[in-house]
Structures are given as structure tokens and as C-alpha cells.
Length: 112
Image (cartoon, rainbow, N blue to C red):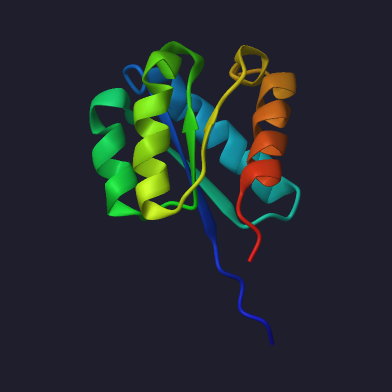
């Protein structure tokens, strides 16, 4: 029997408030579609540290913190993990926004 390994994505946001809601709703959406993917969130202050810990498969940069994208992308390259910007339309805690974010995660997660 094949063991399912849970994938993990991390949203890096300005304060971590809206991103926590997006992370929770997106995790629920992905699980409802049969994907073992957990989405979590941290503030931009913790972003570099979390990337360097290398405990996530994908790092997502919220629209409010896109000015730090290059810095986070370079940190991701050092640990060999993708870092992508979240488009504003995928960062709205309504079903359409959650679905867009879920699909972005499915598209960007490294395939193993």
C-alpha cells in the first residue's frame, strides 16, 4: 500500500491575519478534493526564517508582501523550494478566491 505523504504550503503575509483564514479555507478546499495538502501562514517577519527551516514544499507570497518577493525567492532557491506570488484574485476568502489559490498550489507544488 502506497503511503500518502502530506505536502505543505506556506503563505507569507504582512501580518498573518487574512492569510490564516485563507490557509484554513484552502486546506479545507484541497482536502475536499482529495488532496493531502496542508496550508499554513506566517507574517513577513518570519518568512525568511521559515524558508530557511525548509519544512514546507511551497512558499506563497501574499499580494501585500510582494515587494519582498525577490528576497524570499532567493531564500527559496538556497533551499531548492519554489516561491510564487499569489495573484490578488486568488487571495479573497470567498469560494472563488479559495479555489483559485487551491489551484495555484496544485499547479506550483513540486511533483515527486
